[in-house]
Amino acid sequence: MSPGRQDGTRTALRSGPTGLRAERVSRAAGGRLLVDGITLAPRPGTVVGLLGPNGSGKSTLLRLLAGVLAPTAGVVTLDGRPLRDLGRREVARRTAVVEQQADTQVDLTVRDVVRLGRVPHRRAWAPATAEDERAVDEALARTSLTGRADQPWHTLSGGERQRTHIARALAQSPRELLLDEPTNHLDIHHQLDLLHLVASLPLTTVVALHDLNLAAMFCDEVLILNNGRAHAYGPPAEVITENLITEVYGVRARVTPPPNPTTPMTITYLRPEKATGGTF
Image (cartoon, helix red, strand yellow):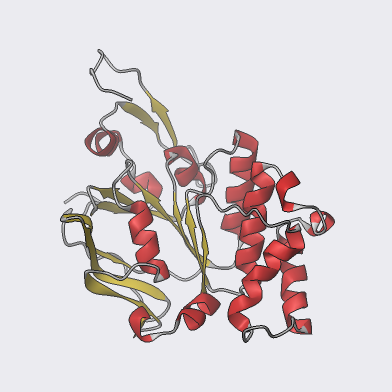
């Protein structure tokens, strides 16, 4: 077995006694396994990228980690306690989620959206406390949105909306952050800006991505999913190889190793040798 490779079916990844952990989790729906026997325990403070083709199980695994979905088999734990034994409010105080797309028809300001992150810390209908407002102010400052706090949500650009969602997540005061393809529909500048922000946060982060170059640039480790199973896990420079890209994605690519420890590897995709006859 080569470095970073897994057995593809029942994979035990690096583990730890505390924090967020998935132990041999599976999820079935409609008679099909969407996630098949995956174990994942991110090291505290690291960024783990979930990579794989469409339908490989990235979003389903994130929802299992967040407690939004219950596993068909296996268990997800926080500090050793199964999520099923924890209340939704308790999980939300520890783990924040940023979905692919989140919109509202309600006339909200940026500050209003970020304040939603404090809901798990308050009783129903209780007014915001000084601690709540302090958390909101800190989240706005961390995401460089203080100057836009009173701006209407609907006037924001795509990149600004994603930063607002991250600010809302930070206002929860989480220790774990889960993001589902947060760079979708963003231009290159906003993709880099957003992931630089995510990587700078003092949190344990699991992020689903499509772009292998972005994963190589910002992730400490990557988990490659294929057909719901773990295909490989480890540092991007060890895991993302030309053979793996062909095996998992069905395309040819040239992988250039990092020239030094501070520069990421790069992936260049090659044109197909002939038409595949596929449909899009």
